Length: 397
Image (cartoon, rainbow, N blue to C red; front, side):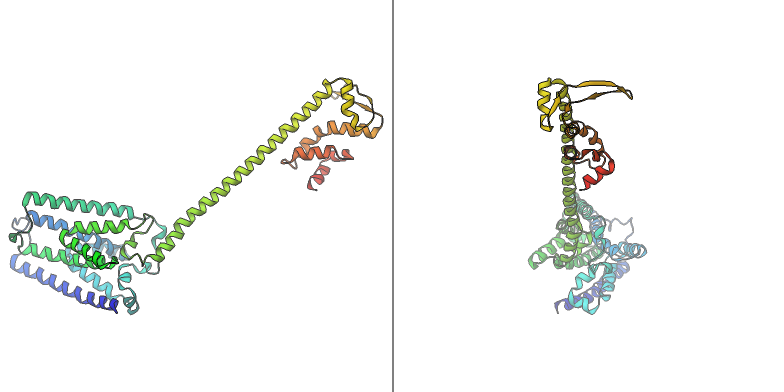
C-alpha cells in the first residue's frame, strides 16, 4: 500500500514541480528579460557559483538517464535537454518512467523497477564486464572537491550568500530549478537508507551544501560497493542487491577459488612427477654404480675371492679369467668355469645379462627399469628374455 502511495505521490509531485518551474521561468523572462552574458546584475560571483553547483548536481541525474536509455541517440538527446532545460527535463523524464511501471512493479518495489534499466530487472547484465566503481568514486570525489573550492573561494571574495540583494529574479529561477533536482535526489537518498533518521540527515546535507553534499552521499554509497560490483548496483538498496551479490560472488569469487585449487593440484602433480623422475634417476645411477663395481670387483680381486663370489651358482672348477682373440673389432673374454653347464649359464647370466637387458627394458618400462632388469637377470631360462617381445610380455605381467 505504501509503495502504491509513493508512485501516486511522485506522479503528482513531478507535474506540479514542472508547472512551478515553467511558470517561474516564463514569468522571469517576461518581467526581467533574458539572462544575457553582459548583464552584470545577473552574473554575480554567487550566481556563477550557483551555476557550477547546479550543473554538478545534474551530473548523477544525467548519468542515470544515459544508463536508462538503450540507444545512444536517446541518451545524447535527453542529456542535452537536461543541460538546457534543467529540472524541466528531470520532471518529464521521471514522469515518463513512472508511466512505464506495471501495476505489479508499482505494488512490489517501484523504486527498484524505476531506477534499473529494463534489461537488468531480472538480475543479469554487466556482471561480466569491467566495473566502473573505482572510476565513479574518483569522478564524484573530484566534483565534490571542485564545488567545495568554489564555495570557499566565493565566500572569501564576495562574502556570505545569505543576503537579500542576491535574491534577484534569475537567481530565484536558478535556485528553484536547483532544489527541484535536489528533491528528486532526496527521494533516492531516503530510499537507499534503511533508517529514516540517517536519510533525513543526508537530505539536510543536500539542502545545505548543494552538490558538495550530493557528491559526498554518492561517494559514500560507492564505497559500500566492492570494486568488482557493477556500477548500477549503487542505485538500489542492499536488500535488493542480495541476488546480484550472490551471483557476483559465485561468478567472480568461486572461479578464483577454483583456479587456486586447480593450480594447487597441478603443482602437486608436478611435484609428484618430479619426485618420480628423481627416484628413477637415482635407481638408474645406483644400478649403473653396482654394475660397474661388480665388473671392477671381478677383475680386481684374486682367484680365491673370485671363486668365493661365484660359488653360490655351483661348483667352480676354475676362477681364472682368460682373454680370447679379437672378434669383430672387440676383445672378448671368457669367464669363470663351472662343473656343470647350467651352473655356468646362471652365473654368466647374473653377471652379464643385466648389462644387455637394461637398455632393452628401458624402452618399454622406464620407471622401474632397474628393478625389472634385476628380476629378469636372476630368473630361470633367462636367455628367452633377450628378445624384445619377451621383455614386453614379462613387463606386462
